[in-house]
Image (cartoon, rainbow, N blue to C red; front, side):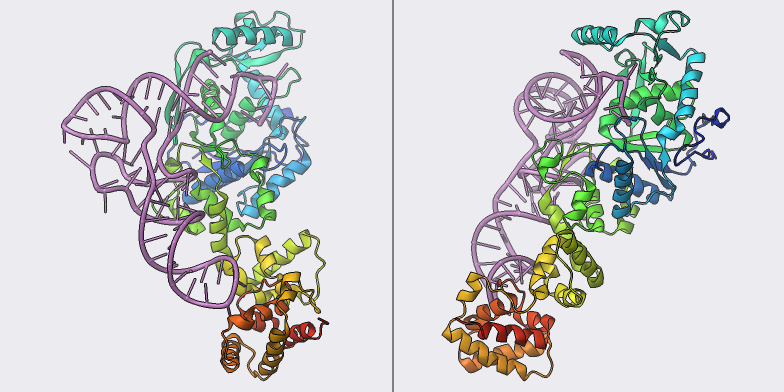
Length: 497
RNA sequence: GGGCCCUUCGUCUAUCGGUUAGGACAUCAGAUUUUCAAUCUGGGAAGACGGGUUCGACUCCCGUAGGGCCUACCA
């Protein structure tokens, strides 16, 4: 088998060392090669949810085959790449639980390797120096577009020594005759006429390699067997294939997954509510819910909707990814998230609610945790997000004396006050302050008063919560505890009318 | 303009030539109920359009329409 060469990762201190050039020949097709996938985002801002899904697919595929899932930061665009954006990617993957199996590879650190490949291509006649000025290029572009053809450089077939001191780029010299096949795992065989493919710039005039060269070299050097990426790269795949062939390298399998669109079918953007992984995290979605939902978006396994990571890994095959772009559906995401909140551990939910509350600027109190732990089991079934869960727990977190909303206060009249006073006394006698017992007492009290629970339930809920939004009464009483519950009732009753 | 990709209920999908076109979310109706929610039961809802091929097409082929991507010294 082919071993992946050691790659420089990190700050690229020794990137320029000429001795660091290596070339791995992998011309023999080797079906036994262990599966290696990668996600290759560029650190130019937030981490798009579509990128997250592509990462998930790569991760699932690698896990399914017992292979490796790698991360490569495509930071060759020095203008737009930032340190902060790198962190966003790292944090995003970490939050999603899609940790790469090796430290990330920074593409720019490998620029010298790319440069050498470009020079090698130049030496072997598979690339050429192009001295077109920006104006000439713009003019050619205009003509080419008008004629409906790819742009061509007049330097393609000129003597390479000509004008050698002028600024220039190095272009790959692609074939003009023939066709190039991209046998995509998702889209099927896609044929491109070579004359439609322009000669791409592989080395900029400042000597910095371009994306199309860098991906090919890195994917090869990293021994990537399956390139699973957004389908905006399908066209590039053809040009990249030409480079693989010129280098005599074995082609990876390509799988181009459709992009995620917003609910209206347009490319997902900020105006659709969210776009970045971090935003979903802040909105209170659970990472396992995101994994399940994202996996289900554009991929399916029969009628299965809710499944574990292990099931997804066992079932996943890129070949089953749907060809068409999918729209983000908030309703379904919420539904899936609710499912995972229901089965989530209460201690963990407590921690998440506390974090969510802190993010919203609420100062924490010492016994918040205990109060949440008691309240969460009561309300989690109705929470679609952690933010909602926090809201549903508000009644438990409120401090005495509670401020009653106007609506709550209006439920207190002479009649209900009298009932609450008697109820308070009845409840005080409960020896076991737990839901079954409390419910029994509430019912017995209603019977004794000769009314239905509805006659005083509203008022009780109002004084227990302040705003009337409390769960099941017996549960709420139990969650609040004897002292707090009776205290809240007393507070309300002692209020001046 | 050119090249390429895509098109099943509102949405995500199943179907891989023969099904009453299935499931999920959403939606509607009913049940339950101490608010809201949750829960339970039931209903409505789809093969973009037009041609072929075939005994038979959502499924294969061609065309049209619509959407998307690429057409950068961005990735």
